Image (cartoon, rainbow, N blue to C red):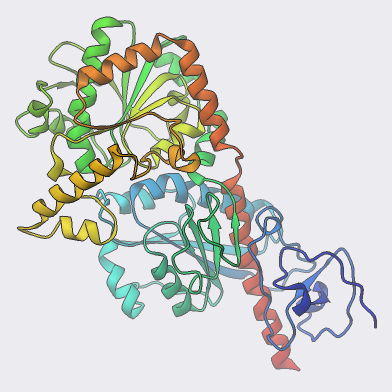
Length: 508
């Protein structure tokens, strides 16, 4: 029977290597010999291979694979998410898990049961609270702690866990190579979400990029930034009345985001408090809000704001700040009040702020997603404190005895290249467009310098508006969370359909 091929759909690897098969025949576990063109058909690779092969095209990220008939029994699917730091857990894992649970509940087929497991791998940026954060994510069934990472990687040991025969390994942080290792151990497909660099294109089955990749990669697509999408999608779902009850109907707020890593907190907490003193002397009507990252407590902030436990306080020329437990705020030595916000997500509060002071990291993408003008601060008064580099540099900077000397040299070199314009940008929005849309201040900056710049910015509404519009334009378009979850869901469905094909071939 002659067959007229239509335009290849999202599950076609190569048009010349495919033929059209009626999907309903797959569910009957029979070998299909009739080549029918219909609305409920899709392309398969030649029967010699006996498996469906998907490509990471745009349609695969936006449309759910339709199923004509449901099986007689419930289908169990495993999703293994490989991740590491607190930033990835909150800005990548949390929204993707929520969307996958929504797809499982609302979309076809309702008979599929998805079990989501998070595997935590070691990270130099880890704060120590990753396990508690992962356990607290709604929709996660189980979490493998970091202490079991090596036995799991080399021996497949995961305690009392059992694994289904069909599933997908999703990379959302860590090392891409490990995601491929885990997928091959269990016979799963591997999907990696990365910023723009595919390190193991032959080892990972599918790559999804946040931005246009630096090299061409098969079975890949650009879906957008998860951090930006998660912040923008949650704005309308949060209680905006909570902000008015705490800060008033028209508050003048400045946000402080020092991050979650010890290195950043030790330098930025006293630095930000000093900047607040400078602003408060000229603009006493402004209020300051310190946003605590997951895993960061008030006690830890108190330690970093005390000159007895943090030498960086005196290095910036500041004095110790105290925590007022009755009002849940910090009070500096000059009497400036700094409120605390410890609940996440806090995008509805951030949107009401006029400006933000932030550290380098994923939070710069979140702030850009809601269009909040931000100053990125990297003070370098103590060079040997900056040791959280990735890769071999991070290892050398933490080697006993010689690590301090290596850190001094590496950080000096990085700052020298940055000031010469040969190191690139630090904030993620600036990296995306290769220009300064989010101001960066790197070097031996002082609290007075940054305070004066903030005062000049907040007193000029046109400047704030222009910064806001540029950030929103940089972050368009949205929809990365939905695209990633949809693609993973389609690969999960295809893993079940591939087993149907294998069973049908054995029966015949």
